Image: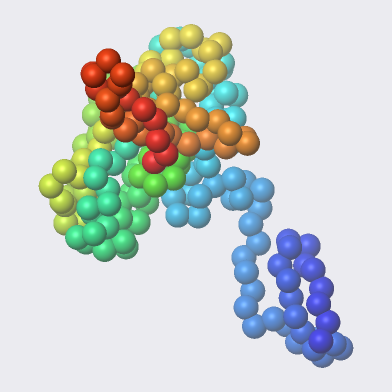
Length: 205
């Protein structure tokens, strides 16, 4: 037996001199697809932030906004209707975000789990359409009480600011955490402060 490393990093084993092709061939992913989620087809968080940083300075102040999307109680959909239904919902959301981007411009990203983000025109009819689509998609997959979209919206009023600023402003209950070049949304976990009042502390989603 001999082992060779293919150009795309796939390890292939074959009989020496037999010329037999491997039984399973994996599709080769180009650089663009490597930067995107296989499930949703949207940019991973780090690439989304890079693309948003390039896109935002090219638009006018208040022409676009940053929208952070969280599907509340998403786990209930998986629990009662199966993981395949959850995956279908994520793809429906992603497809709609991409349709919006292609028609109106912007940047789309998938922040793992049930979190998405989009830079899109600051037009309430488009934002209402986004929310309505997610709600209808949840119902079409059986629906579950409590499963609903939460949208955090921040108009991009200063195009020279980094995109993370608008994500924080749009969803005050979330913080953007950067470590080792990766980004993720953090969900607040409420606890008691020393003064006895409820105060948010941030834990991983």
